[in-house]
Image (cartoon, rainbow, N blue to C red):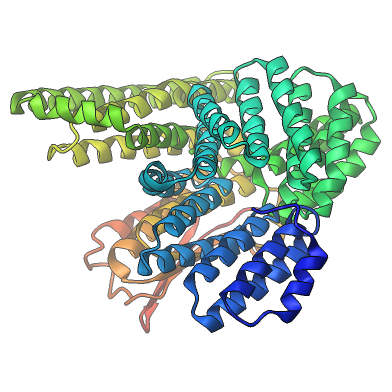
Length: 600
């Protein structure tokens, strides 16, 4: 970004310029002057540059327009539009063999995936960009790339790795005497230090970023620094310092249309009101803030607000309302049920792919090993898998016995937590060790798939056991996440329809289990047999509870087709809970409907 130019002189220059590549560059420069303070004006000039570049068939101009335009979209939380444009930029750069522009487009695409918590895709694009960064990247571009990696490792809960990349980003920014890069790197460094418990050092680094933001008159940097400064003081439990920081960040976030920053600032202010025991004011602020966060799909801060509202209701002496908000918090958090395990796995894959020296040493070691070693490792891996499966089975049996004793709900929560913490981390480590030790061997995919399957099964068991997931809202959230994952893996689009308001209904464990497994079987059959490209799942609550699964594929002939026992299993599951199973298959469309009589 080029900042500090004179807007009026650029506008006068534009008025007399011919419609050529020079005018495109001037439009971009003019947009940059507005980006930090008036984003709508910046978007206007960037869009004009994009239209002119398209008319001139000028790919370099189109790529510059996309890079700058999507930077503003990311701040405004318009990630879907940003992703589409960045993927288009990758295609244009590859077609024109524009390596530097390709490097930027890959990094920008990885950043969008990182913002939206799709860490596997973020790793993929960052790793594609790294060779180009190392070979042709400028000091500024290296600083940006390492800053992106720092943020990714923080998301993956690996503060030491994040700290290393933050220090590299800062070193390249300082070497280039780039205040903008130094400011961003200082913020990243401060957050890494805070993650490591070095809060005083973190505050010093973040304050440096804030000073540079004021020097550059950059609202983005100032807002980011204030929010992170507030977070640092929050960790020290000093409301006298974190509340003013969040209050100062709020108007800046609104000025630049940063929905994420606005949500975090609102949460920080509400938290201050709560600790000052101003419960009514906290409730009023949270009512509007929760709606705003939900509207803009800010899941992380939305869940924090729901949990805080639950505490506020306790302060107001409303235990029933508190329980309701706690249930909503659980439902939002449940969408990311597998996040801790998946983040750990993805972090290991990122490290394996990005640290080239480690990879080369490992490959050399693998080449020296003989076939006998692979056989021994494979057998050992299978033995460990059998042991893990046995442990899962024993945990389930323990739960069944404990459930018949007093204190059933408390015991279920304890066992599910132990399985999640102890066995989850063990399975994750086993998966990475298996991949590392037998990479390239024919047994590797089978063992890796077996571990992944166990992880999925374990998470299903945890969900079914947890009495805090006994609501209809929790079942809907879990169905959305699990079916979405299955269909996404099969390359099939999902349409998930739910009522405007999901009724507040408690379901028995047996109803939850059989309904979930029946719907899962239906989606599995659609992936395997239908040949569909879209599956629609609808939750209906007019007369009891019903779930329909409809695909647009070739249809199913009868229950005696290649589906085997699948249809019989689904029918049996519904009979077990006093429900009904219906199937309609005609005109290339299959509709399966599961219903159970409950009071809504």
